[in-house]
Length: 381
Ligand SMILES: Cc1ncc(COP(=O)(O)O)c(C=O)c1O
Image 1: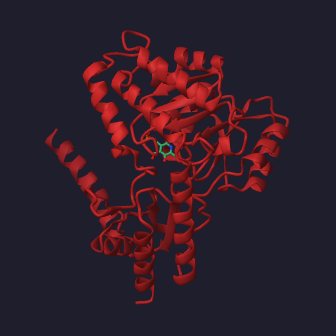
Image 2 (image 1 turned 60 degrees about the vertical axis):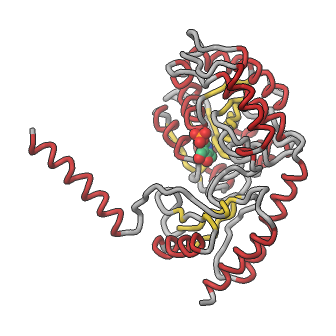
Image 3 (image 1 turned 90 degrees about the vertical axis):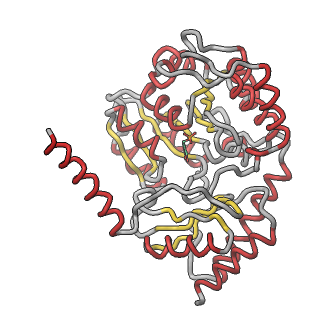
């Protein structure tokens, strides 16, 4: 028994040492300075109106849901939030989940069976990958945003009677690039495929009212389901799925991630609703954020040897390549007062270790300029 225990610890310690050898050992620390490593794109997490609402809700609403929504955990604040989401998204219905991770896993594993075929972008988030794995369905992973590759794979299964599902993110979390939905929808139509979209990083920041990239593209209700997280631009926590009523009913009845868990606290649902009301008119903040990031990308690409990939949003990767080099540069940035993190494989593909910078509406133009200047100095020695 003792021997088994010690071999377990030898195993995990060896694995941790291996990570250290290749600069991939991670540890937790709290950031300080100008935050460029979060997802609070509109600075909502400390917005005065949201804080005021949190205090009001703490005084009046239940602090815990105390159970699954199908048992005693369903509260009017959950339902009010879902109807607010439906009117924002102009969808038939919406369903609240405890996190984006849960929502993606739950939607994918509930709607897709092992007889189906899934087409998944190679850079999809871990929770999409894990969700698909759990379905046991045949999976075609197409090159990132490469619709020629996607079509070649769709063609392979053209005459199959299986249901087909294409799963993408609207804004990619490590690259900040945007999916070309008008082209993707044409492929969905041509090959009779359902579309599932994770709008985690589009929610709040893209679209006339911040409802996401699909709102901007006039395709808000084309997908079978869209997943929106609340822990990013909405400055709160949790997630919701926007879909048709029959899909919602199906999830309520069949989705294990929805059924077998304690629902979000009612006060939290009230807070998310307030965040949604706040983001809708924030057009000036959205415009500022996009301009700030575009200016930064221009400076980095003109003055350094590093690429910012195909970023078109507030998420800007500065692609360094080597793991140890990315770690070193991130650490220099932190020493200069910018909370910047290095992102390494397996989160991003081999050889593309990067600084993953995420701008937010509270960052001043002068700070953006200082950071670009710092990177320029680093690259030029
Ligand atoms: C694209 C994407 N989807 C889903 C998630 C998970 O969302 P949550 O943090 O709410 O679990 C994340 C979070 O990092 C993400 O980047």
